[in-house]
Amino acid sequence: MEMDRYEIKESDNRANGSAPEQEPERQYYYMALVKELVQKQEKELGRPLTFCVTTFGCQMNAKDSEKLAGVLLSCGYQEKEDEEADLVLYNTCTVRENADNKVYGRLGYLGSYKKKHPHMLIGLCGCMMQEEPVVEKIKQSYSFVDFIFGTHNIYKFAEILYKRLITEKRVIDVVKEADKIVEELPSSRKYSFKSGVNIMFGCNNFCSYCIVPYVRGRERSRNPKDIIREIEKLAADGVKEIMLLGQNVNSYGKNLEDPMTFADLLREVNKVEGIQRIRFMTSHPKDLSDDLIQAMAECDKVCHHLHLPLQSGSSRLLKDMNRHYDKEQYLALVEKIKKAIPDISLTTDIIVGYPGETEEDFLDTLDVVEKVGYDSAYTFIYSKRSGTPAAKREDQIPEDVVHDRFDRLLKTVQTLGAKKAEQLTGQRLPVLVESLNDHEEGLVTGRLANNSVVHFAADPSVIGQIVDVTLKECKGFYYLGEM
Ligand code: 5AD
Ligand code: SF4
Image (tube, rainbow, N blue to C red; front, side, top):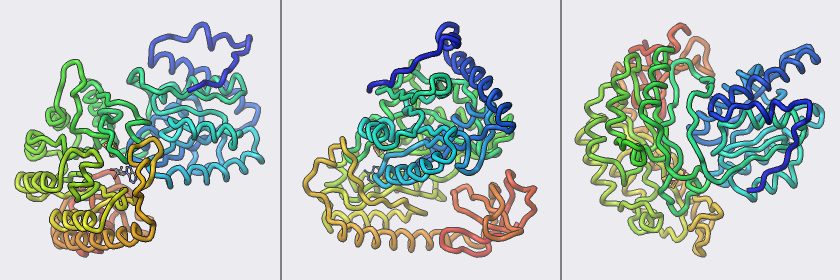
């Protein structure tokens, strides 16, 4: 993709000449330069400069946003909850069309705010920016955007921001492939007691409907030593729960110099003192090994919760989707997991209205949902993503048919989920307390190991701790409890 040209002013040759070549040193160098500029501007304005990073999409993006916020804090900006800030950065998602639309909608609104506050900076990054037509559209119709970068060079954020500040010209820096994984950059955690930890980036699966492999690139695993070191630091910092993140964690480690399985990584993570709960996301059924089931069963800190995307229950559609398993194999896998870990909580992703989906295909999906008995499921209406094989198909499903199926699926998922949740009522279980309750004073909100939400009365000082709570009443998707 083409890069907008920028010029470095003569007066600031530090930007060219003396920047270290090595990462992350290079980015720390640029953070220091940005900080000088921020301080200068603060003096002129007589107030601190503020930023807001807005996240769209998945947990990977949420994790990336923490890194972006970490860079901005290191540059001397102060974080603000709302977008009436001196710098607003949208970390975008493009997995479904409505994710794109949300970004355009909010960007329009942000543009009108900028008209009244012309000094403000607006930046865009994340998956949407890896699509050339999107960047073209932004150049044409959203000229107030100050800088754009993609998923592969997110580590260069400080450098890109510096270039924008110095040149006062729009900077667009999007590359097609990742060249490296940069460790040891700053990060600002949203929660003090739980954290996501990237273990791998990208995806090699090319499911026929999915844009992720095109915008996140090929699979790259982080070195296990770097992962463990990060988790040890988090534990020392008081973090109790970690979520290992990857598009397909079950193929972790295959491309490392010294290959390692995800099951063995889990065993290593389980040894880190201070960490009390380990979760991971996302598992592809085709790569879920017996050894991983074994590791989940034997590692005391690993939550008995597995997110296992089904996508469809129809073997015919699964083949077309390039998922590499059929209905029977999926069900057999679930049986094996339930046998090894009887209290396992299963969640899933399901797509309705994939091209060519017949009523019979859909009934297969409902059948799997009923047989598995998921605790909950994310249900999605198929969204055509240009560039993916499924988007080229002629047999797209009419909207009314899709909506009817979607409603039926949702109802089934909710009824079965509520029934499953009801089974825990009366039990006394550990809850990691996450926050004050949004709706009722005196209540706090936390999560069970299976990820279900519990509200109960307690002093705010328990936030961040794991406490035992009796589940008094099940409200379908959450519980009311008593400490
Ligand atoms: N349309 C609808 N849902 C999709 N997903 C991925 N691509 C699409 C698409 N084109 C869903 C899948 C995946 C989840 C993260 O998003 O269910 O597991
Ligand atoms: Fe998309 Fe399939 Fe990769 Fe998941 S495994 S990110 S659905 S291509």
